Length: 473
Image (cartoon, rainbow, N blue to C red; front, side, top):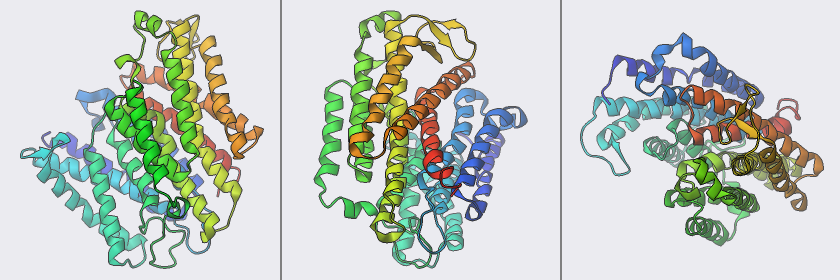
């Protein structure tokens, strides 16, 4: 935890990676997604040999993975807010992305610097590695650049606007200090993305024509608070009592359910479908999987990290629903199609993860010939990146069942169902290749692999229904 020259270089590079954000006002969402993807490719293939000094020698695998997760999180933020049907005035789709990028670069680095300069003293109750004084100093250090950037990017703000921005800085700091098995390079931007549409703040307008703070769309859509409160609580409690989730997993699962319900209550049904199918597949042949040593740990209970990996990307995409819902309520150009397409972007990660879980669990239970897609050689059932015929067919059936649920809801027709299944296949192909690649480089972190896999599905859905189909926005 002491500040060294190597750690100083890493933190400075972490902050310097913010510079492309200054070009966001001149980019379309599609261009921003492309830039973030190029950064992913650079961090995967170029940095390992061009900038070896940026990697922690004592944590090669996780350190390398965090560098990959940084631009991957920016891709998710771009898709979540990349809706350009923003009425009149200067489009402000990039403001939440810029805020999440800033928090990722400066709040993270500020707290990291401070914790190494002042490593002693009372620590946070939820993280004994974070001294309270150091965290407070890190937050204060990040406020100065945040103030100047807000003055540069936003119109004159009332006191309530500055208070809202300060609250978002505190939220980012809390996310940075939390640890439940998921890297803060994901938790920080995720926390800001899902909360920005839920509170009045200057980062969620349709235009910058005035200082008025917008009212989140969900206030009008949910006159009753009972559904958003009771349904997630019952879901979390049932998952814990039923042996599907650990206590921490049930808490985070309830939070994810709440975020989905606030965006569109029927998304909760897709979440339930994923849990039912995934846990049925996990229980199928569980004794046989235990005997082979390839069964899920904790008797099949998923923890908080696994919950984030499975459900996090669907919740991450909910700002897109709030944006299109607000457009339909008069803040922009009404379009049922845009709203339904936003819903499909949220559904795509759940369909992909359902296919992944069912195919993996059924494949491990039934065994049979399991093939590595990278080497095209036979591997043992349960091997990272291995696929079997039985598992693949079961996963496709589960994905089809999930995707077909959009038909009675009239969110789309059979072409949309087929597109969702195609995206699920694409995401699972990526997961097979990445899982084996990451495993060979000590980067095999299950929850993070799931985040990357579901990001592929979400990004593909966004490109299909918002990016390419609409001429690049």
